[in-house]
Length: 90
Image (cartoon, rainbow, N blue to C red; front, top):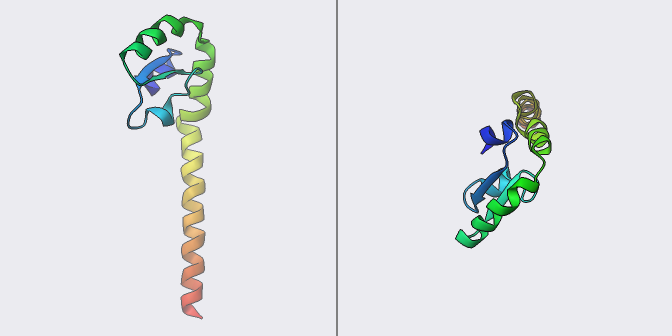
């Protein structure tokens, strides 16, 4: 899914696993619950703006953004561990 969005290609996917976390229904593609919805999504997919699909990919999934978030999370974990260690010393 992410690879398609990186190319600006909207995604049509069944609602399962990580699909709702990755696909923004009506923005980067369509999340469907069955065959009839999938058929309708194929009819509607051309109305989605491929530039917006690519832009949302860049906002959410590029490596630099993900690395910043990981760094922030690790920083919080380290700070919490340091507080626990300090409390145990006193």
